[in-house]
Image 1 (cartoon, rainbow, N blue to C red):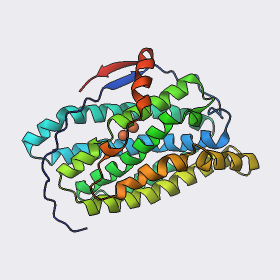
Image 2: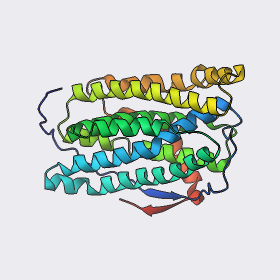
Image 3: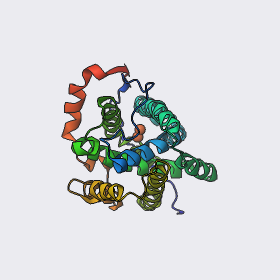
Image 4: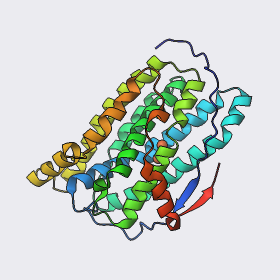
Length: 287
Ligand SMILES: [Fe+2]
Ligand SMILES: [Fe+2]
C-alpha cells in the first residue's frame, strides 16, 4: 500500500451527533442468561460488549489524530462532528465497562480486549491514515450490526427492558455516526484500495475474535457443549431473520469501489425508537 496520500475534495461534515446519557442502572447486576434465557444470543452480545471499551478508545484516538493532520481551516470544520463522535463513543465505553464489570463478577474472562490491545500497540508506528481506515472498517461492522439489532426485535427477545434499552441506544448512535471515520479517511486522502484491504483484514479478525470470545464465554458458563446451545447458535446465525442473512449483503457492499456508508438504509425504526424512549435518556451535549 504505497499510494501517496493526496487529500480528496473536502467533505462537508455537518451532522448533528447528540450525546445522550442513558438512565440505566447496572449496579444491581443482571441475570447470567439475560438475553431471553438464550445462551448463544447472550454470550455473543457479551463478547461484543467485551471488545467495546478498548476498541472505542482506539476509534476516538484514531479520529482525533487523523483530524489533527488536516489543514487548520478544515480541522475547524470538523470540530463539532468530532466532538459528537468522541462524546458518543466515550459514553458507550463507560456504559459497556459497567456492563463488562458485571460479566466479570459472573466469572467470564475478557480475552478480546488483550488481543485488541496487543494489535493496537503493534500498529503504533503506522501512518495514522491506516488507523482511520481500520476505524472506518469497524464502524461499518457496528453500523450494519446496529441496523440488524434495530430491525430484528427477536435478537433481543426476552431481554430485560434496561438491557434492551442499552443495546438499542448504542445501535442508534452507531447508525448516527457511521459516516464520520469514513469521511475523515477520504479527506485525509486514503485510497479505495487501502480502505478495502483494511476492511478484509478487519472482517477476518472480527469473525475469528467474536467467535473465539463467544466460545470462551460459553465454556466458562459450562454451556459450550450443550446441544441446545448449538441449536440456539444455528437459529441466531442462520435461522429466519438471523444474523448472517441480515448482515452479509450490507457488509460486503463495503468492498465496492465508490461505496459510502450513507448508501446503507438507515433503520426507519431508529427515529421511532428515539421518539418512544424520550424519558430514558437526557441529551447532555449536542454538536
Ligand atoms: Fe460505540
Ligand atoms: Fe462507533
